[in-house]
Image (tube, rainbow, N blue to C red; front, side, top):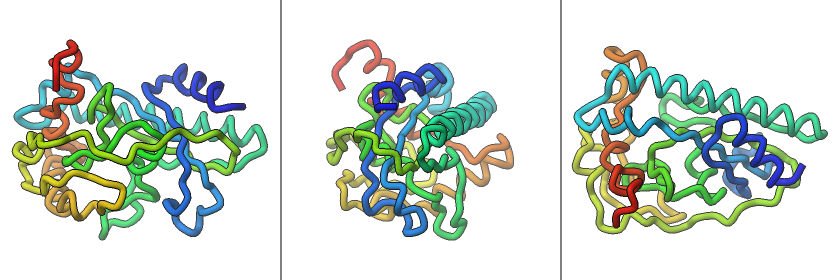
Length: 229
């Protein structure tokens, strides 16, 4: 199966964006033979995201949960197709931490997505896509299948915008533009964000906030209507 056929199938399963990444140097040594990443994004509801400018809602918590479930389902189906062709595949859950001290997952879905050409890392430390802004959730599938990879994105388009930095209730964002060499710690204090989302879990049942997502000009109502950013 080539990348075009796989993209068509993944979109039919409910994905909004699909890309293929060269993972050289990104995966851990344990998974280093799985050199290609399938990056899958699902768009979040604009109506729900627009509602959380002043803080998360129960509706957003439920939507966050169901979006992750959809992504995990798509990743499992993608993995099964790849394996049926005789290759290895590892679906990485949409929202899972394997290091609770460093607050990191098995691999960075955002970095896989940048290498797959889906977007760049914003000052919010979230993936920003040209079409949907940060209003997406992500999942990744690692594989050794010889799939043609996409052109990576290596530069931020955030410019001088600081809206996400200014709205962050945790004051976790540092306002720096991302480059390929930028570490997460240079963009944000993950522990401060974690404190806020952990408190929110007690109220909403999920570790959510989303205020930086709602104010981003990319994916905003103005952008959707074709206005200048």
